Image: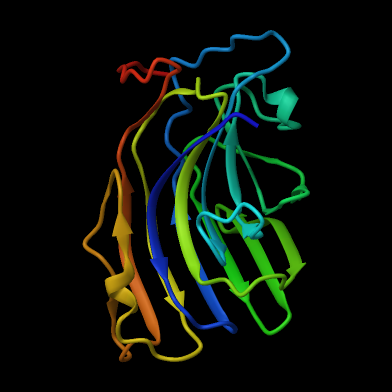
Length: 226
């Protein structure tokens, strides 16, 4: 696949079990300036937060609830219009993506995400407007140590992606880690960072704001509106 991935932020924790991440998102406007160069090969854009054992090893499973959009939604099995996003719980394996059916996200809706790691399973849940719409539970094939976010574009011609923010990000660790907040790294993003009120077992970030992003085949940065 011709994938362009812009990693926006990441944090690291060495604990191997019994932790959970929760976070929220109001989706941005769908991309503008998208170019489909081949009739039967439409670009698509995904934005996500995921957990994995590595950020660079393509063989490491990635548990990543996806917000997805394409100018040809039907090609992605997304029931939404081209002015809407779709969402689904999803896991990347080297052998391919395994996910639940895409669900249309009504314009202006708030999405709530939960990723839970226990001794044997990793479970993803997505709610829209307080109602759960997608859930997937997988065997715990890895010991997830990285939590990270990305804008990901197939074919690199997704155009301009409006800024957005991951909100109310809460990390529950199985054991206190007083240094976890210092592992947050940001790229094309801003945040006041993580705070803890229980000596490092639970960490909270009010928001991580992702800046406007660009995916053009010539590397340009263009302003437009959906």
